[in-house]
Image 1 (cartoon, rainbow, N blue to C red):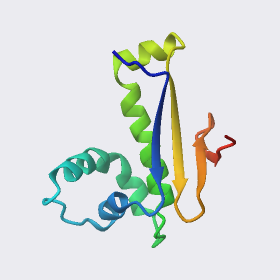
Image 2: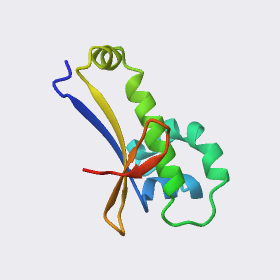
Image 3: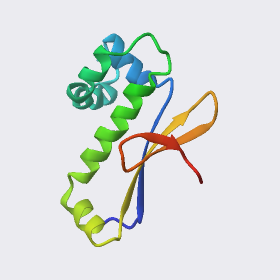
Length: 115
């Protein structure tokens, strides 16, 4: 089924999708994006209400990475391969303006990736 050893979920700064979610844009012309954000919206709403006018939307994008990893983990085949040590999940956040990559650590925070 899964022929990979690693799955990376990577969010990024200045994400247009996260910005559209924050501003409540009408995305009916982009049904795929609209459907994807419809799934993300309930989980991200608490984070969105506390966001200032930061154009990077770092908190929102990072929270979305955590939520998407949880969605990947919800698949039985993924859970089984993780239990068997045949699959690793990684959460990354890419800062567009600096080129830095941050990795989600075991404590739930993002730290500069040392790779």
